[in-house]
Image (cartoon, rainbow, N blue to C red; front, side, top):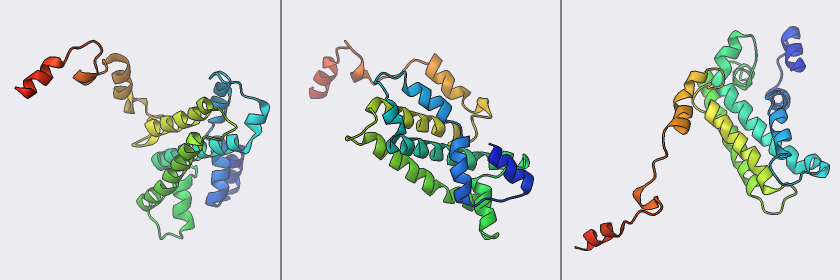
Amino acid sequence: MMTEVEWRETGYIPTPEEYMENAVVTFALGPIVLPALYFIGPKITEYTVRDTEYNELFRLMSTCGRLLNDVQTYEREYIDGKINSVSLLVHHSGGSMTIPEARKELQEPIDTCRRDLLRLVLKEDSVMPRLCKELFWKMCKTCYFFYYQGDAFSSPEEKVGAVDAVIHEPLQLPLDLRPGLDLSYLHERKND
């Protein structure tokens, strides 16, 4: 975050690449994901965490989350005097790109990161245990939950309905999936 403060204080406008290199770290999923990896089940060695596969899982998850966040929070960050990937695309386009166009253009790298992350999670020959790789995927999905259609992280009321539904509303299963329910009479009626 110090890098972002230095950019702001000096008036330096980074390239999108410089911004993303720093933004992947400042999105701060590392302190959440890395400790959780040690509690999932399979033993994680120092070798596993230092492997390029771990770094790539982390980079893809964090890039996806950062871009999703940037697309939804650019207005608030602009008011706060902060830059993000949306404002940088507009700035570096020399004025030829609008905010809605920049937001739309960022969808492709978001989709690419998500697809590459899933491919790495599903890869069979791997240093990282599958359960641990799935944590990166689940965190990416959590980022989608918070940022896909708004900034639900900064505005909790955005997701209250979804959370209430998970906690308070019973799961509705199709009739044929309920255990112990005899549905043979339905088949008999169809044949009549």
